[in-house]
Image (cartoon, rainbow, N blue to C red; front, side, top):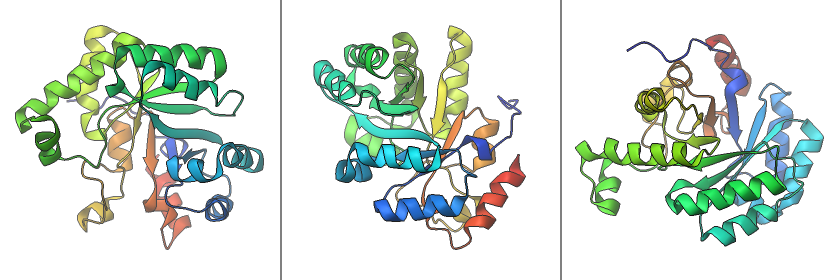
Length: 247
């Protein structure tokens, strides 16, 4: 199958995940990046500890885009209220769980339109920490049935007209086939991205469904999320240069 895209400006597509870092550590890391990485992901750990201050601090200090990864998942009114509470923040992207269902997604979109009109709303499909055994244990889904479950999630995202989805890069080509049939395109944000040497040495921590940066982008990723591959790198500049050389 042909590649979905030939746009290999990979470094511009990198979202660095500031997971597991203190506020001071995140600031120090972003200073080291010297503005080379355009988007930072603030997840539950940083946001729950520091609240909206960490969002405004990083935005004002570095001017980079903010991906607020809260994975909201509750009844429709509660999710809408949570989005309302973020009103006015400089957020480019915000996540909810697609498994909350169609009504929750629609309520989230309506709240986003009212309170965060410049923010893209992204639906999380299945976490990249889940492997075949997890699908079997949680949902009773056998290996040959996983793609059907993914297709249902993808179709829900398309039917509700959410801006984009968070998915494993391993599932990009499956989504591409659905997009062609429905004539609808989604933003595609892919976590679980590792350098080839990390994959070869099985240095992928809790992520199970992984791909390399260039492979993910070739297969259609709009953005790729990289955390410890960069934040814990002993040679950060070398890693950044490696990404730049890919595109």
